[in-house]
Every structure is written in structure tokens, then in C-alpha cells.
Amino acid sequence: MKAKRVADDTWVVVLDKGDEPVAAIEEFAREHGIGAAGLTGIGAFERVVLGYFDRDRKEYEEIGLDEQVEVLSLVGDVALADGEPKLHAHAVVGLRSGDTRGGHLLRASVWPTLELVVTEPPAELRKRHDPETGLALIDPCL
Ligand code: ZN
Image (spheres, rainbow, N blue to C red):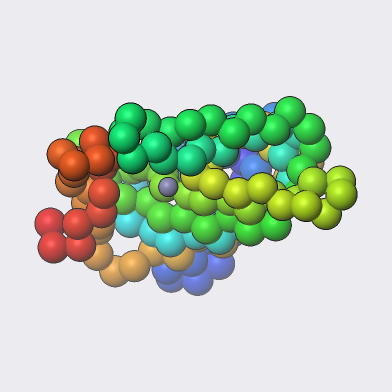
């Protein structure tokens, strides 16, 4: 992973072959003391597990793709949960046929690159546990 601050509030972060993006982005945020950010990215994965949130079971159903896919769009945010930066990202990926699959980004392996633009808002964002869903959701008033 390489990261460069390109403006006061903006970073370019480039992940390498084999990087796991959720862990890498959270590590980047921790390393640079980033408690809130928005991010977008493009690149490709050699495999990915996307999630679809099952309301009744309150957990993600896994959508596993064990093939090379283009990351057509990755959109996410970083906020603090229990004092630690936590990534929430969604991805739309493109298959060889041009068909797309999408969902909550659970885990992936980058190949050959994932190029991210990370923008820090001037304030921290914090997550609060939502008992109805069992998820940690951003509460901008915290
Ligand atoms: Zn999500």
C-alpha cells in the first residue's frame, strides 16, 4: 500500500497485489489518525466476497466471486467505532461478460491495483450500535 497526501484534506491511496482492502484501508486510517473520511475507488480484485444484509437474521449473506473482476465503483466511509477507524464500503464489480454484481464489501484480494481517493471532513464521525439491526451506524450527532 502506498499513500500520499495530495491536498490538506485529500489522500491518494494505492493498494498492491494481494492486499485485503478492508484491513488495508483501516490500517491506513489508523496509521494517519483519520477518524472520518469518505472514499471512492477503482481497480480490480482477483476474488471478492460481497454482502447482502438479511434483515430478519441481522447478518450479511455472502456473495462470493472467485474470479477476476473489475472494481467499477467502490464507495465508502470511515468512522470511529469504539475508538478505532472502521470502513463501510459498497462495491459494484464487473464480470468478464460485462454483467455486474454488487453489495457490501466484506473482503477481497486486490489484483493488480486498487486506486482510492480519500477525503477527510473537518470533524470526526462516530458510529453507534443500532439495536434494531445489530449494526454500528454513523450518528453524525455523536
Ligand atoms: Zn453496507
